[in-house]
Amino acid sequence: MAVKLYKEPELENPVMIACWPGIGNVGVMAVDTLRVALEAEEFGEIEPWDFFYPKKAVIRDGELKDLEFPACKFYYKRTGTQDLIFFVAEEQPTEAGKTYAEGTKAYRMANLVLDVAVKFGCVRVYTSGAAVAPVHHTARSRVWAVPNNEELTGEVSRYENTVLMSDIEGRRGQGNITGLNGLVLGVAKRRGIEAICVMGEVPVYFQGLPFHYPKASKSVLEVLTAVLGISIELGGIEALIERSERDIELLYETLPAEMKEQLDRFRDATHAETSEPGPITDEDKKRILEDIDQFFKKGSGEDET
Amino acid sequence: MNDIDALTIHREPRLQSSSMVVGWSEDAGRLGPTVIDHLCRTMGCEEFAEIEPVGFFQLSGVSIEDDVAQFPDSKFYYSEDKSLVLFKSSPPRADWHRFVTTVLQVAEQYCHVKELYTLGAMVYFGAHTAPRQLLAIANSPQIKEALGPYTLARGMNYETPPGQRPTLGAYLQWACKSRGILGASIWVPIPFYLVATEDPRACRKMVEFLDSRLGLDFDFAGLDQDIVRQDEKIAQVRLRFPEVDDAIRKLEGNLGLTEEENEKLVAEIADFLKRRD
Image 1 (tube, helix red, strand yellow):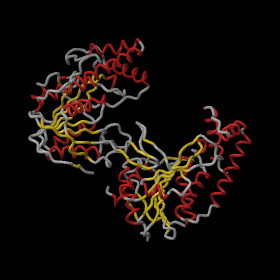
Image 2: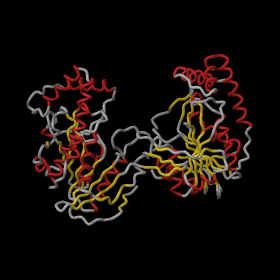
Image 3: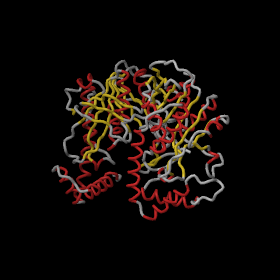
């Protein structure tokens, strides 16, 4: 189990941005869009076989040619304003029967990622994922930001379209971040490394569905680029948003009228103030989710926050 | 837990250049364990090592199968005379990499294994009386060539479809390849209605290949008796249930069955063959 570096670029006070698959593929889509736009160069990987099961066997003419494993790669970019290291994983290491990273392997992977951050003198680490929220899919996704030390809250609260947990109705600053997004934040705190998790809002009724949600990724991307002082072309992700909105609307049209009516109530619930009674009670929300689950014959998914 | 902790060696075999055969206990038609048991018994193999289950299996109790409590088991056997090593194991639920590494630690350090064969059963929609063709997937061009003289299909092209995972056998062969151990997965078709029971014909086919390749001088009397016994039982089912007879006749004539006929055939055969004599 090791990090393999193909080269050791000289970087000045780099920032690391890490991502892995999760709800709506929000984190990977945001970070990978940035990585690709900046043409970051691959320079290392975490050897995957101790963390993951193989994903593909390739047999040609009766011979086992290859066994492919999920990739976990490091990339770097000198942008002129801010040196960057990207870590992009194709999967989260899970223990038997679990959906999200937890346990010994996840903890080891979090430490290996941060070993690279420390080796190259990263001044900060960003992780990225989804925040499951009682919002409607027509609303702009906000970004929930969780820093791993109190000094960062002031800075985070100035990010555009971003909220701290204490800004969110009923949360009182509390919550959970599951999987590697949470673990990296925690392990970084333990090792004295600044880290912030930025999560794009995904409507609660999409949490168990196998959809990508590029709208949330775009919100995360806007925050990251603003913070890092980088400008990139967003045409690609906007096209994905257009397509996903068309797909969602098509799906929406197939829903029974009563269910649509229930979901439309999330339009009014969006961004409700703590002091105001929300238009949707917890009981309503539970019933709506049960109806949605039943409609798609899906079990309830886990959320990242 | 490291690799050493995972392994218990009861005795060290004196093998200089051996072949290893690996069978998984949850195979269709119980192919893996049946072949290994026959080889073990007929060749007079002795147990010499085992892999501890901790970390590889969920040890939260026991499962019960056919009225009997089961527990994961991963044991190595050997025959010095035949330079043969057998490994019969439940497929691990977790940490495949460490498991495979441990298996190959035994293969390399204790047995100097030069060739490793994994046994596999694939479901096919044909009759149990139809001739079977073994399929080989080699882990190198050398072993593919070495298998040329045997009656094996050797030209398969395949990629694991999205959403599925490669088999444990493929993982083991890939690990062998990276260590320079020649190896191949050998697959035998099992009729769909024997998947839940046993298929001695498939076992014989597999053992025929191993006997020939590894020079085992295997005595097939026991396996032949098993085939006769099962044929008699299936004949009884066909006699008692005309619809089962019709279905098998159709399969023998290369005709397809309806879903209902499939289900009926599977249920009747499994029910009858699983009855205690």
